[in-house]
Image (cartoon, rainbow, N blue to C red; front, side, top):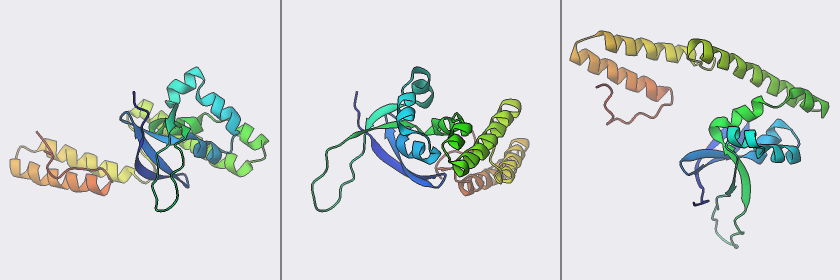
Length: 187
């Protein structure tokens, strides 16, 4: 099993720029900057990342850091760091006890984290009760997309279906969804 990672993206994660690496088809982010962002104790977080349940929940792995080549100088030896799955990273933040962050004197970090946790709790509730959740400000775009899809499904005219499909493609592109121009938009 290869321990190779490759950088696939740079993201802004709540004000911190992080690399996203891919390992065995799964995207991961480095754990340390996430712990620093939450202003929690690194030693305890490092131990907790590999506790049985957390290792499964967060997909914690010890991966070789990607090498960034630059001109001049020697390449430093490749080191390993703790990474967690990108799609599970917010769960790590959601499970942090804000009272502990406050007790460490990090009132501002605790407040910011608590607001995020409340937002995520509302999204989870919406998903579990309605089957869908979306971020504030994104609802109008999702609603428009839903109307377009319903319109396309309601018509029997092939030209009209094609026109609406093109509108759907454009709308998805505007929302940031990568839609291949060659992809059939309907069957």
